[in-house]
Each structure stands twice: as structure tokens, then as C-alpha cells.
Length: 74
Image (cartoon, rainbow, N blue to C red; front, side, top):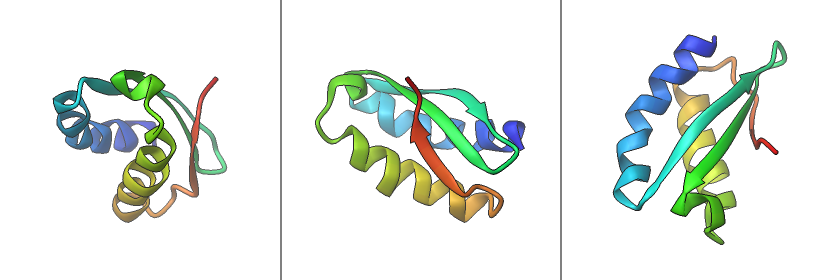
């Protein structure tokens, strides 16, 4: 499933990069939890939680039904 997640992130990445940010895949658990790290401008942005949950999580769940949740990696 990690490869599928990476493919979807590649589709999302240009939107994040257009705002000076990016996303890094940290891990995908067997339970369907995707751990991501937002970088660049996204890392310190007050809207990063909304980007993660309402944007990236929504798209990943839509494209990969096995994804249960997306969380910010430490």
C-alpha cells in the first residue's frame, strides 16, 4: 500500500509546491494509518492541519479505500 500512497502524493505534491511547501511520506501502518510530514512553508503554516485532514486525507481515502486516517508525523 505504501507504493499506492506515494503515487497519490505525487499527484498532490505540485499543489503544495506551488505554495512553497511539500509533503514527505514517513510510514504506512498495517492498520491503514498514513504518517506524513509537511515541509517547507507547509510545516509552519497555521492551515497545515486542515491541509492534512481536509485535503490530503480526503484524496488518499478516495483513491485508496484501505487508508483509514492520515496523521502528522513527529
